Length: 359
Image 1 (spheres, rainbow, N blue to C red):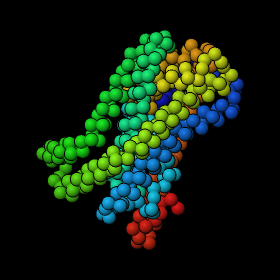
Image 2 (spheres, one colour; image 1 turned 60 degrees about the horizontal axis):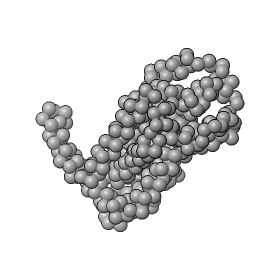
Image 3 (cartoon, rainbow, N blue to C red; image 1 turned 180 degrees about the horizontal axis):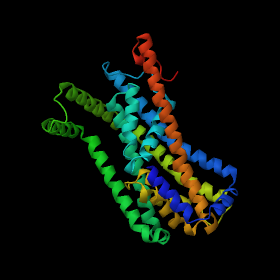
Image 4 (spheres, helix red, strand yellow; image 1 turned 135 degrees about the vertical axis):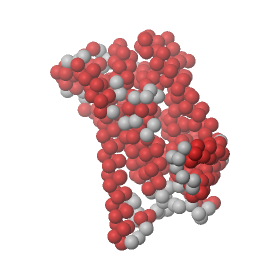
C-alpha cells in the first residue's frame, strides 16, 4: 500500500509544478472546501446509517422469533457504532486489493459487539449489492444517454470504463446468487472443510459445522425478513443513490471552489462517476495510481491546466486519503476500546457483554 502510495505521489508531483499547485490551492474557496469535506464524510456515514437501519430491523425480528440468539448489549444497535463499522470498512477496503478486506473487518467488529454473524453478514451483503447495483445502473444510464460525450472525454481509457461496468455487473450477479441460495453455501463449506481436513489444514470439528449451520439459519431468516419488507429495500436503494451522489458531487464543489464555470454540475458528476466505475474493481489498494491517471485524462478538458493537478489532489485527498486517516483512527480506538472492555470484565470477573459498549 505504502509503495503504491509513494509511487503515486511521485508520479503526480514529478510531472507538475509543486509551487503552482500550492498557489492554486490557496485560491480554493473555504466554503466549497467545507462542503466537499462534508460530502466525503457523508459518503461513509450514509453507509453506517444503512447498516444501522437494516441491522436494527433484522435483530428486532430475530429477537421476536427466537430467544436463543446472542443479542448485542442494550435494546438497540447504536447508530454511532454503525458509523464506526462503516469507517472501519472503508479503512480496510482502502488498504486491500479490490476492497476485499472491508466487510470481513466489519464482521469482526460486529462479532465483538455480539451481533449474530448471519444477520451482520446479510446486512453487509445487502448494502454491498445495492452499492454495486446503483453503480452499474448509473454506468448504464451514462452509456445510454451520453455515450459519445463519454468517449470524447475518456479517449483511450474508454475500454477501462467498459471493463468496470462488466466486473461490477458480474459481482452483483454473484452476490445475489449467494444471497438467495444459502444452502449452496453450506454444502460448499462442507466440501471445503473435507478438503482441508484431508490435506491436514484443519482437524474435524462438530462445533465448527454447528456454528456454520447456525450462521446459515440466521442468514436465511434475515433474508426472508428483507424479502417480506420491500419498503426497507426501497429506502436502502434511495440511501445508496444519495451516498453515491455525494461522492460525485464532491468534485463539483471543488470545481466551483476554484471559481471555474462553463461546465454544469451534472456533467462533472457524470464524469466522476465514470472514473469511479472504471477503477472501482481493479486489484490495487484504494485504486491508487490508476485513479489519478484516469482523472487527469478525463478532467483535462474540464479543469484548466492551472487547476487540474490541484483539483485532483483535493478530490482524491478528501474522497480517499482523508477518509482513510479517519478510518484508521476509528479502527485503532475501536480496537483499544474492545481490549479495555475485556480487561474490565477480567478485573471484576464479569462477562464482557455486561458492559454497554456505547458508554
